[in-house]
Image (cartoon, rainbow, N blue to C red):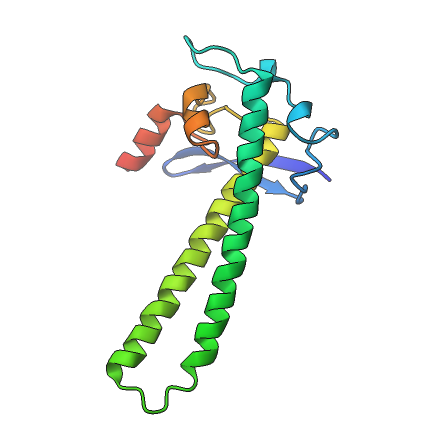
Length: 170
């Protein structure tokens, strides 16, 4: 399976959009799969930062893998809760306005949680693909290194601190 990338421009700047055929996280985009297929020397660092070590890359890979499992379980639980809430919404005979409003709030809350978990799952899968393939640690806006410390704190980061600050000001 392959990953194709195309550059798109927006009115707010440049961003890289990926169109990809799904590559399961366990197989890896480099063929070997997993943290062992990542050469730490290939990962960019900011000036003044120590280079990546194999142990740090393996830890990052393991963290992303455990996040995948946790998020998939979270989505499954949310979808089950949503199905239950949708099923219960039909037997509202005798409910007053407060009961109906509470059911609506609960449904909306579960839908929001499920959507947030799906977004996080997509970001995590993308970070894992980038780690195992090409582009991990490179800012999608300016092309500079995102920073080792930033990636260790938030492995799904795709923008350097400067570009992220610019994006948040917009």
